[in-house]
Image (cartoon, rainbow, N blue to C red; front, side, top):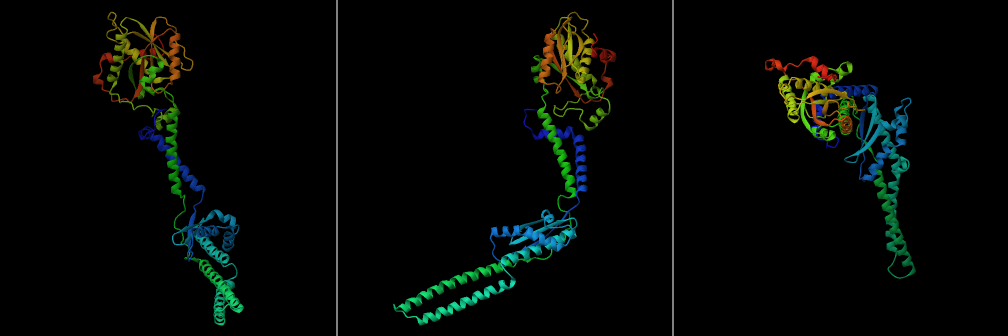
Length: 463
């Protein structure tokens, strides 16, 4: 899987084979989210709307938003609230402002209770309107009210003066006529400037009239993140981390899982595959840690193909007998073979013991030159492999499980066999399978496997 593309089928296989582990970790994540919600108290947010009459450009609206959350407005808001220990700096992270459709700015306040949040939003809106009116007017309220009237009176006076001069001036080219027309031109220019000032003053007066559109409604629910959101976020985060952890571990895993890869690493041919019932393969895994692994479902690999269900003991033993038949056909002369099992591979150890038992109970063992080769099992440490020297054995048969060893470890095992003078005659891959229902009626006396013989050969005693 280290070189494969991650597909949805891979994620689905993780959910199927690690569902109990994912469920436990999801509960743990939910508890962490709940604990986080207990550490941070609930928060409530209230909002008040402020209307800006007149025509406003986008940049002007953004300027008003900045003014609403400026330090000057926040200091005035904190003073209006009158709460001990609350100043403008303390309110900076608890207030916000944004523009909406229709020249409306919505100011919001967040606090520990709905009542305090509502009060904060109302005071912020009021102080924002008062401050905006002050900086827009450019002076006192009396000056803002009398300036347009004075400008209009100046326009009326100028028009009257222009009319009087126009009546008094003649159309000749005398010095007096030229001076009169020059004065009229200056007065006309002054009139235009006065009109422009009047229009700007009226526009500023219209924009300065910000209006609070009623008190802020009292919030009825918590502001995000709520307790439920924290619990859900903790659950989803734990599940996501579990999936990512499995995918990362699988991508970094270099153990060989397929028969062609194993055969290529050992430099020999695959003779066949055999099954080991899951309950038998786990009989050596004892203790609290092993029980926890079985409870969480982590005692089996998730990144290997799903094992096929084994029918019964008879069908499983047929696979071993067929493997013995292949050995008999490839090596018809009576000979001894060394069965090499990597140390720590319990599945391969049990498979080798069963293979030795089936080879000893071969019905053709007494026929001349037709018996199955005599097998002797040895366990070889993979970190420092050492295979016994060739004595009476004329080859080595490697038995191992898939998805347990890397290519380098298997190459070292093959080198140890070569150093001991053993040619690898074949490879047997063992895999755990769920134990199917046993059917005693299908068993024959020859099918009985002596337990003592299996145990003796598994420890390396000669047959």
